[in-house]
Length: 410
Length: 106
Image 1: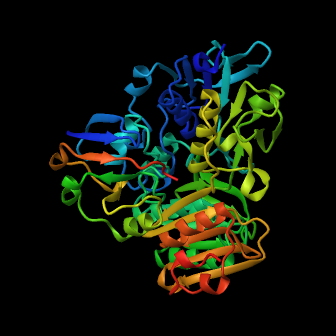
Image 2 (image 1 turned 180 degrees about the vertical axis):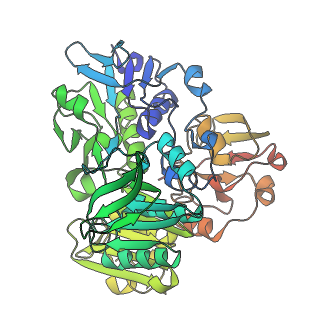
Image 3 (image 1 turned 90 degrees about the horizontal axis):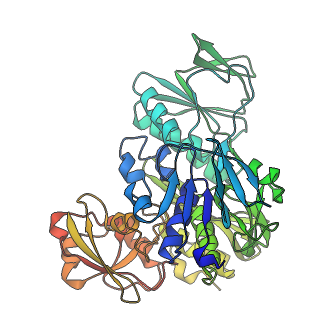
């Protein structure tokens, strides 16, 4: 059977899975497409959940990737409220939680990642929330507001976005972070202290270098977060943002090679089985500009890999090389990040953090590995190009904001 | 509702009725029109919803914010009539709007 008429089954109806289905139709795929999702609603954008949606500036319609009619009109068999429970690669079938079995010619795993829960006392109390789905965000929005205290466990980007939205909703917010600084795993000191200061000026309190050992509760509802120094931080709700774990159990059980996620090639195809693809948060994928493989959790990555898989299935040329990137909105700050800070030996700050407009460049020799740009689109846009094209830069020019970003390449 | 004509780089035309209040980008994405990627979903963070606005409509689509301006400054194939389509809100005034997509959004 040619790929063009193959039955493509997509497991996971998030940003990656939904986009793959739409792109297959856009690229002219004529065969049946089945899209299997655990949530009750069709694919939607998750980033606004911690930003515009939480603040009431976006509604369910605007979150949806496509209108609900799109799937029926385009011959996409969208099956909500079901999970895939088993994969039989020899028989080429997927078993679903409702007992159905679906046969596939080609399978796309887009099962995503799930929020990590801390295995501590009180973890099952009501009011301990994660922010992964629209339902999570709905609960959070109903819980926080004026007169309420929101405790955020984890000082990463999700935690900080929730903190900013919590303040916008009028709640008191305290962020608890195990490391001595915010964003410790992902950003440099300059950025960490900038964000801390900015959030403090917006009324957020921080408990840094504090390990959470348990949750206090009354009548089944959380009332506080217990720290290892013996204190309890009183709160009405908790959001836990301490990272995510890939949902690769289905793949592992079916004998597909997994590292931290399903191992795939540049076409997003499993290295074990040519009829299986894995895209988005669940994929452990090559990234040629860094000459290594890793797993990413970002929308641009989900979209890029959806493109790779759909292109491979339709026999289209592979999409051009990409520079991974992501963004975050907090208060009036726009943070844009390009690349990853691998093997960095020098950091160059361009602009003035005090003015809330600056960029941090991470260099390996005279090459840019990554850039974190605060309210600085030119630095982000040009940085992304420099990273992708592996162009060397003049560090003195890079450090001087009076020199245009168009002139920093050597 | 406003009728918007999206023209792909290869000349393929799509006439779409777009609800007032959506952006020109959302009108394309929700109807699966090729050529507008909109990676960031409308946060003005990526410049992958770049379009050329038909000259006759330029004044009606409003002014660019400084954020949009500086994103566009570094996008590929930028012209005088370049806009980020996530920053153009659809209103009755834009009934008949014509936009053309660039060769690539990278």
